[in-house]
Image (tube, rainbow, N blue to C red; front, top):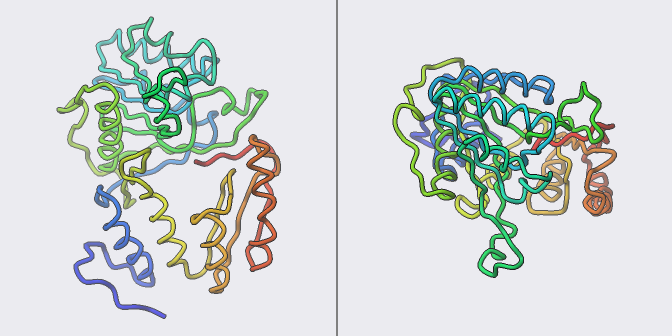
Length: 322
């Protein structure tokens, strides 16, 4: 059944896509950032494609580089990025690197030590310590954002951490199949704003001016916005956005995730969509990097299968599009 569209939605009318306008109306009330037009997204599969493109952008930076990541390993790929960032600093480029404090401990010694030695301004998001009582409260407030913005004009974002396991051509010990995007157009400013907010929270430094926020020309025909979610502010906005999409789905839903558990976001909404006659396909890894999560997920598979969802197991390498 087609429902009447809300007035003054502020979005273009696409024939046959009224339900998408309704999703946009919901997200307009959830997100603080507006929809922007004139963007271009180029998918970059695995570190094989993403890392060379990101490194080339850093090498070509003239004014600024902002990098935010959850994991920044001190391995072959991590050292490539550290060296490129150090060269940018020597050229006079303003560089800021933000690494989650938990993610920084995935390798030892941490890459942040190498960055400081190279005079690359770097900070750790919400350092935690079991021996410092006031820091225990932030133990689970982690920053999983992954973005690189160069000169305020070109951005890279997606699910990829900086670690050599993403470079599949080198046959790493723990390969990960992941996805990043090269982004151009006005939405880059929203990615830069997300970084600037996190950097100001962590360090107290305010990033502003043309070096970080230049005028950005249109680059394509994609309509996009950034939805900031957590770890404490803007809480659960991504969840509400995805629930809105599941609730308005009319023909098909495709879910690709490594971690599928019984939450208000995963199995119940998917089951409801299937019961409405929507084709629901869920793709999960056949072998998970977190065994306990895999066992907990497997115990729930019968519930979505019994109610009409379709479940697919993907072979290695592990796919983590988070």
